[in-house]
Image 1 (cartoon, rainbow, N blue to C red):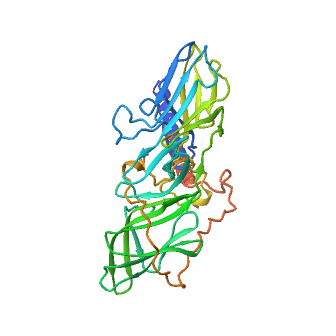
Image 2: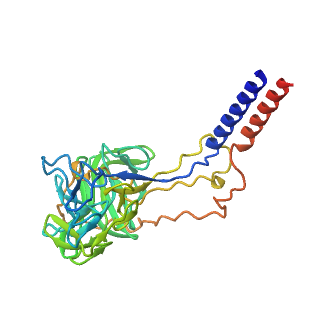
Image 3: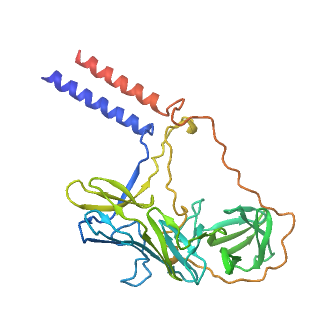
Length: 396
């Protein structure tokens, strides 16, 4: 009996060590996570009303007073069991106004609404950080030395050309594909604002930042920027009749975009099906006509910690969901600072300053699915083997 108990203990110990080996070698794969709405009946005559309070794929703004805090809605009416007739599924999204700009969520992504008369000209938020959001270097502010080129998005770059002797004036220049497009002399506390005309809409802010402070040193001069915002100069335009899965754009106003299903939508029991393109899907239960809407997001696989092997040969592949920029807060409209004011551009900056394009990372020849070596596996395997041999010898 004691021998059997000892064998069981050895088996459990070996399994535990091998589990630790698997975790240390990073064999855990990334899998999509379902974000589910509240389930409900989908029988004849049932209505399912989804918003930001019962389905986190839809958004709400905490600055808006109740009961209109939700800015996105999805209303479903079932004419018969699991069946939605034409125009009975309605997706509505509304603009939410920040201190100086309007924003809108559309099909799972946040945009800035450019046209004050129609909510259909949507600019993607490329860079956004302030005291709540950290840029890539992990700070809430950007430190820029004079002459240094800060590569922005979509071919833009920012250069602090000069700081005066007292540090009271800063000369900022913005470039597009290496060509100067705007420059301005500012003082600490001022906002640098670059505007353009897009789709016949004037004074659209594409980049803005706050000049926090400036310093002159013996080796270099620096400017510290905060509240940085960059928006795409290639906006998405939504038009009546545009199709998204079974839905079609039916109405556009100055504050709202509405889509309705152009065809009958039918669900079967125990079935997963698309509802609003590949963004929102639907699942029906196996027993009875109940179901729920859901969306899928991929989570990144855990990083390999303490590995001494070649990182390029690691079997772990990090998968990031394609959404709003990583630096975009949950509700930019609640925190945005800056303005849609246009100013005349001062004299052009020095000609010897030019922007450079980011070079994309080159791919290595290593096949991640078939790594040449697995970091950390050899040492832990040897430890597990020695432990097992020692336990067996004790039995003898």
